[in-house]
Length: 420
Image 1: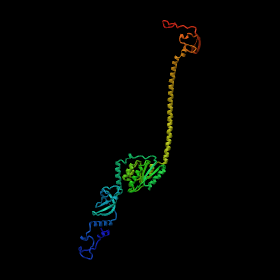
Image 2: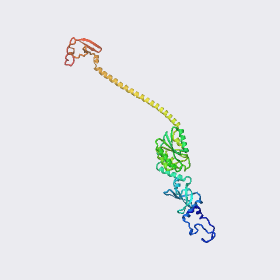
Image 3: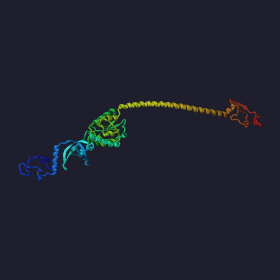
Image 4: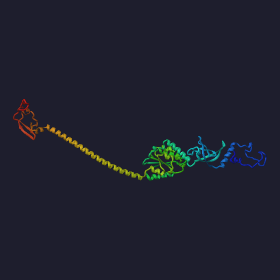
């Protein structure tokens, strides 16, 4: 194939010549393709036409509606742009198509930026699209809503699955770019509010094609640690395209799968990403995320003072209740002791009365006397007095020395059963 200049030369206009082809003359047409002998191969014609088109039309934006969109296994996308009167075939190579947030819908109004060219193999006039934009944020919004709907159907957006963050974390992991302003804001707020808190930075890109896989890797690294209490996923503001890594499905699933509660703070207050919706807590800004993650020192001091006061009041109340309860128990115990003492005293008196009734002293008080020998042995029968000259009589109020003068048997009772 000849070079570009030679190819373009074959289409240059020659002087007007009314002579029949091949007739001798001073201005004979010497261009390739002037006759059958100098016919140009189709490939050379198409190559020249392609270069003519590309040189004649610099890269430009073309507006129209999407028609017949299809993506083949290689990743290349083929479609048409059309309006009311015409259409143009388009191709978007894989390296450009991979930057799209999602596939456009049929009939969606878009603007395509690319190069007018010709597909030499088929001789097809086409627009090689390098960038595709829907009106406003249509394509980005479409991708956002599609993924949101998908994750909602799986329950990943449900409030019931979201976990509370720890009240006073010992270590906070920040997943963001080490060079970004968001990290400085988070560190500043945590140092001011809770200077005792450790901060672990999981560095990753937060913008561009490599951002999503790096964010996923950072979340997974943090999730494997057992010394992190809460994660802040954050970056500063930017355009929809700048923030798009946080709207990608792998990032959303990594946030949902994190074993550690995640606070998401992406962009400004008006920016809402899929990561925000899946995270356990959404904060409007990086600084607000830090405030959610850690309590202020003065707040904790006030809470501790309140707890101490409440504890003292509680202890005093318990002491009072204990004292009152002890007083009631003491009264019950004293009353029970008195009742038992009264019962014991009554029983003792009854036993004493019975014992007194059976006691020899009781007998003596009734007017009887008890004879005993010198050794104190009671002389109960007549035989006990035989051979005894002296004995003693025990009366109720003392002893009496006595002498035996005569021992006689007891008289027999009369027939009436009485004594004579």
